[in-house]
Image (cartoon, rainbow, N blue to C red; front, side):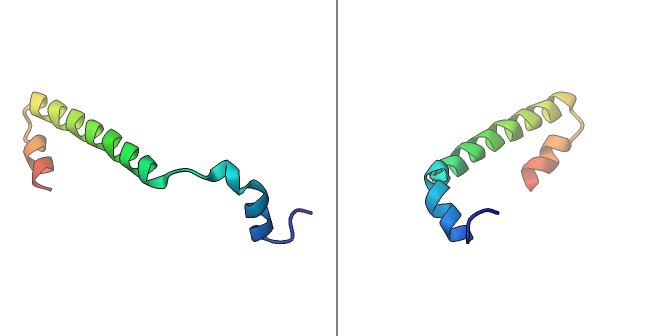
Length: 57
């Protein structure tokens, strides 16, 4: 059962998945930056040198 090929499936349902991947990547990158900064702030607060190590990467 199913469509004869992946191409047929794409033609039938493809409009459901049209997204701007560059916008998705930008938003994901923003979230990663926010999490990284939060982790660095916690490491600095702890004063155990992890923040310095992380910034060097």
